[in-house]
Length: 326
Ligand code: PBG
Image (cartoon, rainbow, N blue to C red; front, side):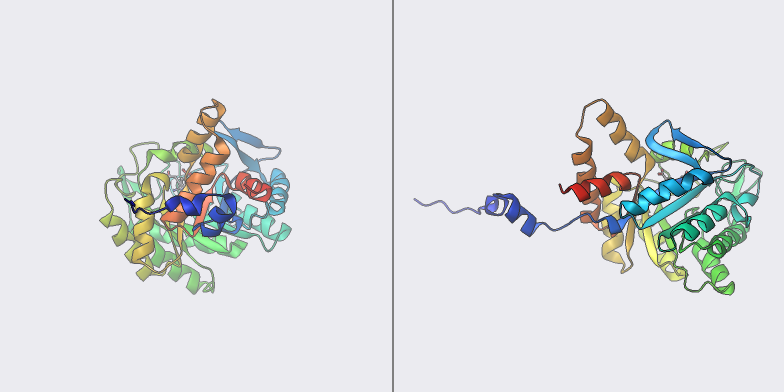
């Protein structure tokens, strides 16, 4: 008697066939590489929890940019470590702030490299919170004006895209309005629309020296247990004028990436955050996993979930691996 069953293995039998039917591919054009810029000279300081990620002073930046461009990466996102911090995060919106100087320098060196500015206050405030603090509370509305000022000064310095990450309500409206008033109607906003209060940001806070000095970010970043709230956040940001929606972190939130992708029609970015990077680096260093295979699998999973764009500290490695052909 003949038994009927489906032969799924037909389409897996050799590399050619597998390549032919592959649904998702990584491309370096989808990647954004994060950079940490710091005041001073001669500084190339490795972040201890993030091997191969450095805080760079501006004189060290040109070489890095050269390498990035050579690898075919076409977009970077900037985070700044200022000399001085104060309660209002003044250096975030200073025309000669570290991020503004870095933007000008990069745009002068390679005008076609997309420079994305992370717009937040936590790296610039002495209390390390993303908004104005009063009597132990993080105030929403008074923070909006500072964020708009920050975005405008970043656009003025030459930023191609503004990426507000601070999770105050109304931040997209405030920034869109500010940019438009200042004549930057063509600068897109890539909103960190869905940003969870995540332990996966730990290594970043070392890299950006931005850990909150009291309390945590749970009154403004989202509860990891919630998904409907993610859709409400995304919906608000679309109404307020976001051009690209980001979900962050990525690895533990693939379901959220997929929901945002299927519910809305905007491009979706996924932030493969610092803790996701450090875990793989640590395991690979111990010889416990195959770093290249794991990274490519993880990033492909993010694309499969619906990410059009991936921000990742692995971008340079991925560029090399894709050039090698895998
Ligand atoms: C700033 C900001 C954070 C990250 C990006 N922008 C940290 C935070 O909210 O504390 C995290 C990125 C990463 O972990 O790689 N608000």
